[in-house]
Length: 499
Image (cartoon, rainbow, N blue to C red; front, side, top):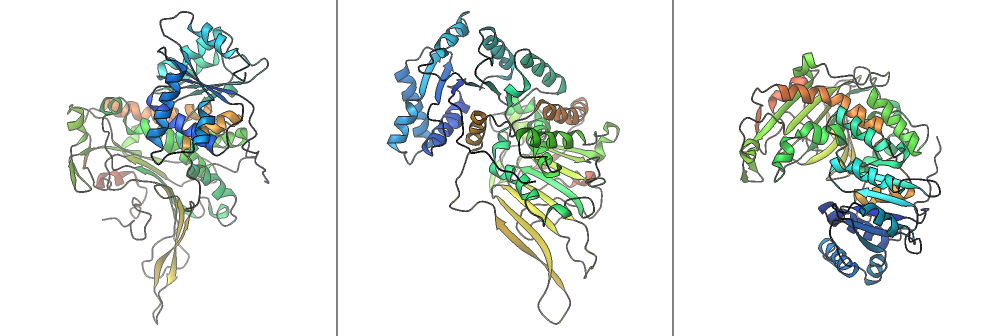
């Protein structure tokens, strides 16, 4: 497959309408991200940005507020000319929730085509419960119709809290929108390191022939943090690690790791390949759940030498069975991956913060002493890299081997650092939804985790505890298929040995 990518600056004149523009996401990510895109010449010349908020604010005051957002983000300063160009793009519209004519007034504002290009992208940085009502209100005044111009709507994570609620939300949105108009954001998909998985797999002849069950023993996809839940205790206790990380980010990483070669790199081509592999994941047998799933909570311990409380202490509820550590064993029922276990895990307050894909290969035909097996590791964060561990002879008279590393950084010092939201905002304006979730992906992910979520919620047995700052609980190894399998830790050589 030969693929030519479209020019990134080939974007129609458009207006970006930000609901929830004074919220934390807009202040910390969206406005600084848009400014950076503008400063490097990636925004269309005719782009306008309309902030929609609950309060009456003068344009002068709003633009001063945007300056405070940029000052907070870019502490070393920024180019004055770039700022003047960016600030002139920005407008404000008050949309009081008590005003029955609020959306008629919004339509009147946007209909001023001397200021606002009529291609409209709506970014809904609002509560999930407000997604469908906002779209309904836009539709009632004709602001979602695509008679002459395109209309796109971004909805923030989470898309539902289970399969039933995801379907209900989808039903509410599709009353007024086509699937092609809905952009479900998962900011992980905007990360360059994640997008690199697909390209590294399929643009290198050395990898694709061995990317299957003939050569691979198992695959691990890991996201661990040293941080606890912080001030998100109530949110976290209603969500848990399984729904917070595995249902979204980690299953998307698995899809990119395991999918077949897309027919092309168009949005439809990439999403079709991901949907197919997600739907091929074997349902987790709830009657043998303890062999396929493991959960735990962090207890009090030490992180970087500092004493930290346990999850139940932070929550103030000793009866909670919500997991801060979740691990699953999955199988993909297709010819490429038949019999290969995929171990996926996420955790708070572990001994290291790392996101990576670790692939262990089967034993080599020649075994010298008790040599290690080959590993291929793709580092996503904090270091973007690819490493391969192979066996080599130890110099000398005897026949012995040792593990050596082939180590390559995916990110060099001179490379641009692009925030995930910057990439996704650009994709939105380009009409490229390949890095946004299709409804079939969201449903497949919920379909997989829902039975585990429900089984864990119904089981009120006290959850296994692990000290904050420790490695994986020894009990988590219950999901492994073979006794010689173990959790892969640091990407540094020797960091993968079990205790």
